[in-house]
Length: 230
Image 1 (tube, rainbow, N blue to C red):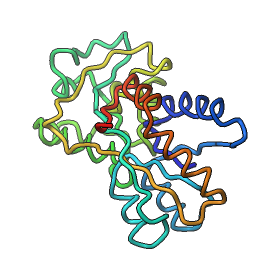
Image 2 (image 1 turned 180 degrees about the vertical axis):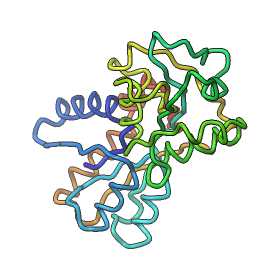
Image 3 (image 1 turned 90 degrees about the vertical axis):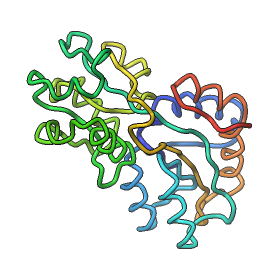
């Protein structure tokens, strides 16, 4: 399975539950930015399921006849947050994105907008907030949204605009975050699809059904996603 990096911790939990429910089915996950994974799929990468951080890449695969017809499914809507280490002096709780224009923020991490939906959303939010021109010289681009968070955790950046699903993960416990207002960026609607070249199409469709079930929806909600109505 190929999955967007914002799903790393939620999907680790979900695949564990799936294995317990279906011990006869093997499942493994490769994480990355949705755009990079899309490029790999175009080149014939052997994945059965693609979980993207947008709806565009799955639909582009469908347009190329690379997916099982009518297998696309919406599983979640993501959210952006501004994340800083717990020791940071940046007042993100009150200033939000405007805190990133502060002179003490020397480097700000986002996912690369060229191939990461969360990076495009972060750039849009910075523009909407009127701080993009101030923040642009400080930007450090991660290959994925999870790498953007890692840049801040490692000290390579002072703050990041990342996925809520990563900010609430156990590994992000030594930080603080503030939600980016939803009206500052396009909705991050996320969808998945089963690939026509799937080695085990039945297993892939079983996982698709699992992702739309109540237990999976509960886990996604706990990691900060909004899920579609059942």
